[in-house]
Picture (cartoon, rainbow, N blue to C red):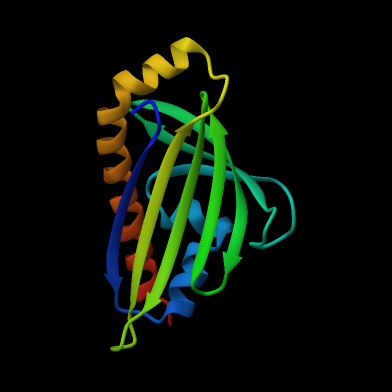
Length: 158
């Protein structure tokens, strides 16, 4: 765990990649689409969804409200986007891959990685080590719920 950890999950969606991409990158609708997000506030960068777009996302984790600042680091519409964040002595990367399926649907995969920041406090490193397995399990569960919410929204886009 001290070197970081990663989690990956995917889901099949009965919608074209363009529809899935539209749901995934619509930050203004995210709190109504993703049940795990309590609120989302844009805090900088370009309008819409582009490299450099930044926002503060508030979720409930372990019974507490937590807000994280996120930034779009890379996009390749409608196939891939990479989102970054730093908090509590770690860097976080979320990558979404959209793979068109032969039947017109999409396979949506989310990869998430957490890496301790060089110079993180001893307490931060210790907590990451101790809470690693719990964090992995909670993260996988939250990721799965987000993908299911995206699926539900994309499959109902006219």
